[in-house]
Length: 392
Image (cartoon, rainbow, N blue to C red; front, side, top):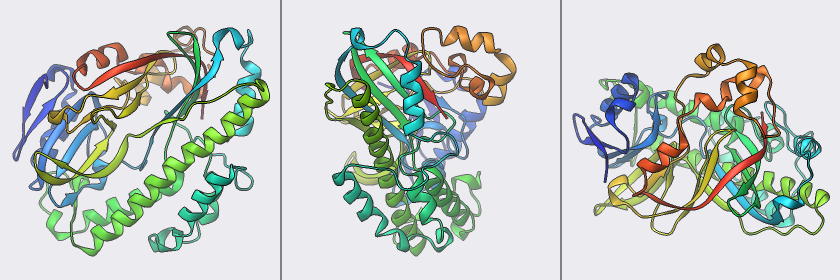
């Protein structure tokens, strides 16, 4: 059951954390969301924090409407994890060379492949099918196909990461977090700006929450571009896994891999809840339907979780997407030193320089408390701790 209820003008938002743990700016955003005339349900995850337009960590079900800001600008951002046949004892004492090999195979930050990434035949076919529809996307992205091709199989920056982890049985897992790169961001910004100009949104309390309405050309165009970008994000993660598995095979020739666990956490789905067909936006939240597998990461120095959804109807069958930030990037850079970063990532082979200071584990909420708050949303199957982390 939810822990707290926030009154809105149309519906009440149900929170999976105490109200006093949510910053006032995020509460204001949640009230605005829960006052939209099209909203049917709002569920707030325990990693909630302030975001652009809509809070990160919010699940919004709407009748015949979608707010692109309630999806976020990194359309399709999400996670992937693969359990390997390796044990901790198979790893070398130093993982520095393995980290270098991963960084050489998978471009990070603003970097891209010089040409298209070298992928398996099956994945190449899926990518080709996706890009056969590129010409149908919004005309403003015309001319960016080459860049989008070269960015497929790249990490990006910010809170995106590639990790090597150990579970409680000392089994080695590969994990990564990334989204739809520049093409997804560009498409999101185009449609957020377009929604703001529509007359039915003129009197909203926050224009960043502007919506598209079902049955309109603007909604049709948004769904076309949205679902394309969500597929791109998924293929981007699979492409990185192709490259990551290649690095692991070079280092450990006998290694075997299980099928990946994959989940979006910035996306739209068309689902039925409480007998109604709704557009459900999960911004910083994963699908946690009964039996659905998901991934909830901590930070670059804490634990992450492979979970199974419990199908809690009250949460719109959702759960948190991670720990969630407790301070802004700017505040983290002001508050933490490089010594703090080194201490907080002790035992992890990773960057420990000023370029990732805003990603210091101390900038995030306590992932253990987040998981405690959502015990009725997911079951923990595996607890992972990273031993290597690549950041953009």
